[in-house]
Amino acid sequence: FVSRSMRLLLSSKLKYKNKAEKGPNARKLLRDACKEDRYPSQLAVIGDPGKQEFVDFQDVMNNGGTVTNMVMDGKQRGQMKDACLAIMDSLEDDIVRQVEQTKGRVGGYNWEKFICVSQSGLCRKTKFQKDEEEDEEL
Image 1 (cartoon, rainbow, N blue to C red):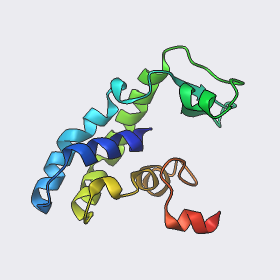
Image 2 (image 1 turned 180 degrees about the vertical axis):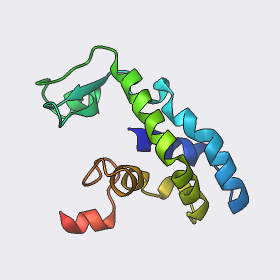
Image 3 (image 1 turned 180 degrees about the horizontal axis):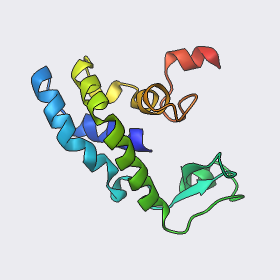
Image 4 (image 1 turned 60 degrees about the horizontal axis):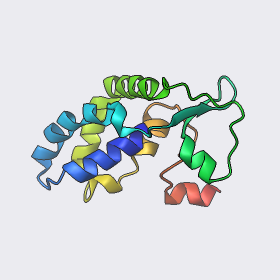
């Protein structure tokens, strides 16, 4: 959800083609991606300890999912905000550098892969934003 929030925010607000303006403006926007109102109102956590993930309760229900091992006590949006801020503290300079180097639409870049797989190592593969390399692996 962090990378999706950041991607949507950058793509809607960062319209500069001038490389020199991209980075400073992206830096100003990054913390806004962590605001609680950028995440689903019914954010939940599912899964066994050590393998938990944040999910949108409505998406789970609309796709025939289960509420087994689901926690939705109203704290999840705050937890997501805290996780987002920790990611930004750690990766902000790398993200800004990548924004500056991205040709074309910043929103078209696979930020989920960059943040979750490449930079932080929190994920083995992307969940929301697939790319051609992952499609070949499946």
